[in-house]
Image (cartoon, rainbow over all chains, first blue to last red; front, side, top):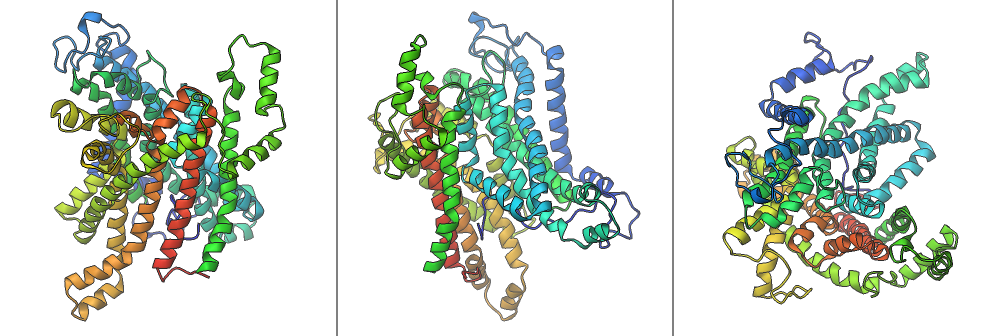
Amino acid sequence: MATLAPHATAPLLDVAGGAAPLPDAPDAFMPSRGFWGQVGHKLLRDPVAMTAACVILAIVAVALLAPWITPMDPYRGSMIRRLKPVGDATYLLGSDELGRDMLSRLMLGGRLSLFIGVTPVILAFVIGSGIGILAGYVGGWLNTVLMRTIDVFFAFPSVLLAIALSGALGAGVFNSIVSLTCVFVPQIARVAESVTTQIRSRDYVDAARLSGASTFTILRVQVLGNVLGPIFVYATSLISVSMILASGLSFLGLGVKPPEPEWGLMLNTLRTAIYVNPLVAALPGLAIFIVSISFNLFSDGLRSAMEVKA
Amino acid sequence: MLRFILRRLVAVTPVAIGVSIVCFLLVHLAPGDPLSAVLPVDASPETIEAMRTAYGYDKPLVVQYGLWLWHVLQGDLGTSIASGRPVTSEVGRAVVNSLILACVATLIGFTFGMVFGFVAGYFRNSILDRLASAVSVFGVSVPHYWLAMVLVIVFSAQLGWLPSTGAGPDGSGNWRPDLEHLRYIILPALTMSVIPMGVIARTIRALVGDILAQDFVGALRAKGLSEFGVFKHVVKNAAPTALAIMGLQLGYLLGGSILIETVFAWPGTGFLLNAAIFQRDLPLLQGAILVLAMFFVALNLIVDVVQTALDPRIERG
C-alpha cells in the first residue's frame, strides 16, 4: 500500500535506551534520570494516565483476590431470588437470571476477562516483535516474504479475522486466545518492522558495527534497546481492542463457556433481562468499558511520556 | 492514471490470492473433517469414505484448492450445508443488508467525526477540544455490543420509541428505503457509527493541527485572507486523508458488524456468519468471509486510487 495502510504508523521518534545514548538526546543538559526514569516522572505528572493506571490496578487486584473476597458464592443461584435490582439488601449489585450475586460474579469475572483480553497481546508482542525485528534487520528477500505474508492478514478487518478463526477452531478459552493472537501478530510485526528498518540505518548502528560489535550484540543493545519502546506503546494501545474483542467472542458464545463468570458471556446471558432489570443487564458491559477506556487513556499517556508519535 | 490503476491492480493480486488461501484453509483448521458436522455420529467408514470422495476431500490439498478457486472465480461458492441453497445467493442477499447498514453508519460517523475533529483541531486545548477528544476516546473504547444493548434498553425497552430487532415490520429479511423501515435502521446504524466517529475525529484533529501549523497558513493569513478562506484551504488539504479513512472504516464496519448485527438481529452478513458458526456450516462461513475480505481488499484499492486522483501531492508514477 503506497499511500495509506490501515494501521500504518508514522515514522517513530527514536527512543534513547540501552547502552547507546543518542548524541541529540532531548535533555542532554538535564540531570540524567535515565530514559525510563524520565518516562515514569512524566507519567506521574499526568493526572489522566495516573487515574487510569489506578483504576486498572484496582480492578486487577480485585480480580486476583476475587476467590477470597467475594461477598457471596458466585456460582450458587436461587430460583426465587432471580434478577434482584441494584441496591438490594442482600445483593448489592442485584442478581442475575439464575439468582446469582452480580457483585461476586463481576469480581470473579474480571479474572477471565482480563486473562483472555491481555494474554493475546502479550503473546502477539513477543511473536510479532520477533518477526518484525527479524524482517527489518535482515531485510532483503526475507523481509519481502514475511511482510507480504503479513499484508494478507491486513486484508481482513480484525473483528472478522478473530471471529473467522474462532468460528473455525470452535469455542473455548484456548481457541479464542489463539485466534486473537493471530489477529494482533501482523499488526505488531508491521510496527516492529518499520521501526527496525529505520533504526538499522542509523549512524550509531554503523558505529557499533565498525567498533567490532557482533550481530547479536547490535541486535540486543542498539536494536532492541531502541525498538522495544515504540512497539510496547503500540501493544498497550491494543489491549483495549483485545479486551473488547475477547469479551465479544464470549458474548457470541465463542469464548468462555458457562457457568464460568466472564463479562462478555454474562452480558450475553443477561440480554434476556433487559426488559425486567435493565440496569443489572448492562453492568458487565460497563465493566468491560471501564477497563477498556482505562487502558486506552493509560496507553495515550504512555505514548506522550515516551514521545512516540501516534 | 490508467497505468497507475493497472499497477495497483497487479500489486493487489498476491494479496487477493493470499486471502483466498486463508479462506480455503479456514475449513481445514476446523477440528476433524469438514464433513463431521453433516455426517451422523454412527456413520460407517464406507459412508464417510464415499462422502469424502463425493466432496473431493480425498484429493491432495493443492488440488482441492485449485478446484475450489476455479469454482469461486465462476461465482460458485459451494452449497450451504444447513440450508442446501447456494452460498453465493445467501451471502449476496446478506451483503446488501450489511452494506446498507454500514453505509448509513459510516455517513453518520463521518459527519459527526469531521465536525468534532475540525472543532477540536481548530480550537486546540479549549473546552470544545476536550469534549471532542472525550467523544473520540469513548468511540474507540466502548464495547459496541454493549452500546447496542444500552440503546435498546433506553430507546426500545424504556421509551418504546424504536423497534429493538429486525430490519422491518414484516419480519422480512430485506431492508427497503421507506419511512417504516427507516425506524428499524436507526439504532443499529447509530451504534455502529460510534467507531468511525472516534477514529475520524481523532485523525482529523491531529491532521488539522498539523495543517494549521504549516507555513502556508501563516502566509495566507498574512496576505489578509479571511478566516473562512483559510478554513477552506484547511478542508482542501484534509479532504483526501479524510476520504481515505472513511473508505477504510466502511470496510471495517462491513466486516466487523457481526456483533452489532447479532444484537439487533439485522439480516446481514454478521447474522449469517453467526448462524454459520453455530450450525458448523463451513462452506457458508468460508464463502461469507471470502466475500467480506475481498470487499475490503477492493475498497482499499479504490481508496488508494481515489486518493491519488484527488491529491496532486501523491506521486503517480
